[in-house]
Each structure stands twice: as structure tokens, then as C-alpha cells.
Image 1 (cartoon, rainbow, N blue to C red):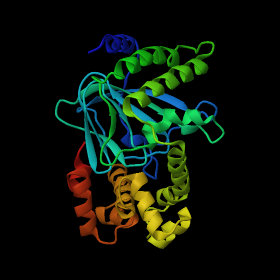
Image 2 (image 1 turned 135 degrees about the horizontal axis):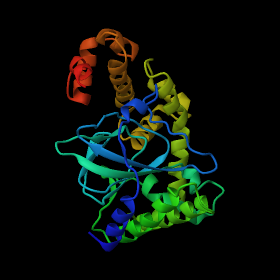
Image 3 (image 1 turned 180 degrees about the vertical axis):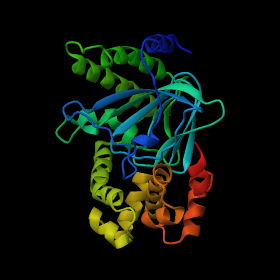
Length: 317
């Protein structure tokens, strides 16, 4: 590993990494909702993942996110794709796809997760060149995750910035200009990340088109979150997004990485999994309440998503 990465690990030795338990933090809509300061919508969480304490909970969210394993390999699933990460590989999370960290034998690593809202970096009133900081999050290659590998040339500068950002963010009792320092370091990180992932950035209008498409789909995502058990037609989806039926199906798959029907099923199954663990309702009752009229179909879809039947999932510790 590089000298910069060794320096980052030295900084992390003085920080607390909490056990990861996302399943208990999902809201009723299957989202991992995090309260972000409106004036400073930026958050760093330090987790310790192990097979012994790993809890799976597929989620999605509007905030943008970076995921960095520090000690060993990790596997991250987004939509229908799984990404293998080595220590020091920095993943740009596809936030609108249902995603979760995958458990495997011997899984044991500390992870730094950086979350922020896009307006922390760029809004429609910002100078046009600020959009470059968000290119890795909005310009997603087809069928390929955005990963800055630890061996890439730009990784060293990213590690170096993180070694300064973390002490600034976790300074006890705060310090003068803490928020300004965090933003300065983070923008520098995004600069090196964009350089490493984008050999040639797309034109500004392409970025703004992606941003506007995401904003137009937001009412549809919110409707699914609140009303996932109800039937949703393509015509209703088109009306919520203000698009034609053909446009909304294409735009939704591009944004979520899966079809509308698949996404709705994922949200239903995520809520079913939570109810299996937290309530005494029968499997049939849960299947009906999350929107599956046919329990045998529910059982089949649940097993495909979670690798076991609903009953076995409930009995597992």
C-alpha cells in the first residue's frame, strides 16, 4: 500500500468504528434515512463489518455516498450487480439502486462511509465548473460500477486528503472553521476522484439533464416509498413524473438500475423482511400487507432476494 494509505490507517487507529446494524435503522419505506444538517448536509460514519454481527438491509436514499473498506475485502450489491472491493478501493454508491453490503465467510473490515447531499457541492445557482465535482455520481457507465481502485494513480492523493479530512470532521468539541475545513478537504477529494474516474468529462448540459431527470422522478420514488403495497400502473407512474409512459420506463431504469416492477418488488420485500423480524404476524399476513396477493409468488421472490424462505429468515438470529 502507498505511504498515503498508511498515513490514513494511522489516523483511523485513533477513531471509533461502531458495529454495523443497518437493518434496525431502515424506516417504514425501506430507506436508511439520515438526518443531515440543512446548512451542512455532510456526514462521515465509521463502521466495523464482521460476519458475526453483520445485518443485511437493502436500502436506497437520495443522498450521495462513498464507501471505502480499510482492512480487507468487501462485496457491495447495487441493483442486480455485485462489486468486489479490495482494501483501499473507493466505491461511488449508486444511491437510487437498492443496495447492501454482502456478507461472506471471514468478512471483517473497517469501513469509512461519506454521505452528502448534492447541494453541499453544487446547485443550479453555483458556478458551472462546480458540476465537475459530482460527475462520478451522475455519469454512471452502463453495467459498470464507479470504483477508484487503490492501485490507481489518483488513489494516493485521495488517501492523503482523507487523512486530513477525518481528524477535522471528528475533532472533539469542534474547532474553529471545522465545517469550512471539512468542505475544503472534501472538495479536494472529489477533485481527485473526478480526475481518476473521468478521463474526459461530459458536457455541462449532459450533467444538468441527468439532474433534472432525477428531480422529475422524485415524486414517483416518494409515492412508491409511501404506497408500496398498492398497485402502480405505468400510466400512474408517468403522471407522477410528468413524462410519457415510454419516457418514464426508460428514465426509471436508467436512474434505479432496474425496471419499475422490479424496484417496487424490492421495496415490498425489504419491508416484508423487517416485519418478519419485528412482528408476530403470519407469513401470509405479511405477504398480503406488503402487496403480494399470491403467497407462493411471495415465497419464491423472497427466497430469490434473501437466499432462504420467509420462515427460515424469521428463525435466524
